[in-house]
Length: 293
Image (cartoon, rainbow, N blue to C red; front, side, top):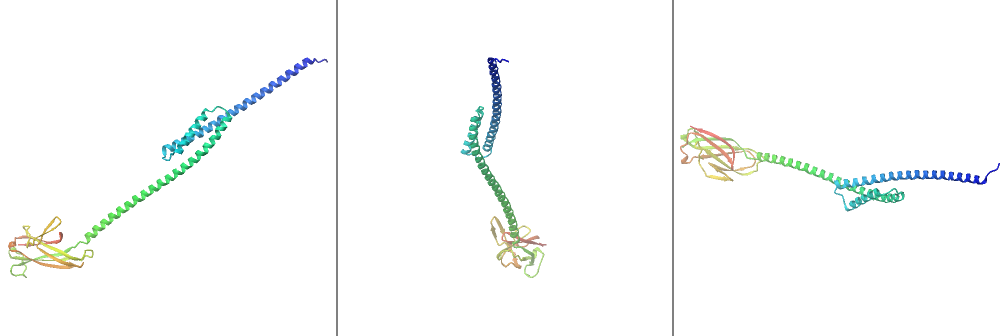
């Protein structure tokens, strides 16, 4: 069999071209798929970084809206994050450029994390101080309430002590005697000349001991003072009295008696009820009454 060399060469060249075309097609397809996968990966990475940057900005906004801890350093970091996000959105699908950007992003992220931790620490300290302040205010309010309660209790006790320490008189008796017969009692107005008043100053350990001014006042049915000895003023009070006794009081019960002789202008006594009042200064200790016919 005779082989034509020229025809054989053509076949060989055509076969080589076919193989080359197939190899080029396979390489192109592989390269395309690889680039497509790389672009897809790059897009995913960009989305992840963009999401992280957006979260950082949201966190900065939350801090600036709800806290007074925003400083110049925080503002600078926020502006840097905004700038990084804008650059990322302008990037085209260049893997080498994105790699450099991601390196810068890692450094920015590291700085931001340190700043966020500092802010969280300051916020925690601020909250603790706020809680301490609230507890202090609550304690002070509780102490004020306790003090107010104690003051009220003390005031009540002081009133009770003051009331309990007051001088008191009991067993007040008034006896009317005849004219000219000093020892003979009478109930007739026309015969009356003298009124004897007796009473007991009660025992009281709370009363301040010492000299006590005791005033006896006798009022006739016309409301005039019998045996008027004058008047004494206590503040805005005016007391007209019939007799004054200066008693030394030592916290023990003591009997007091006095004779009050009518003046000429008091006679003759009017018929009716005579009121006998006993005072310590301007405070009334007790009273009794007698009726003359």
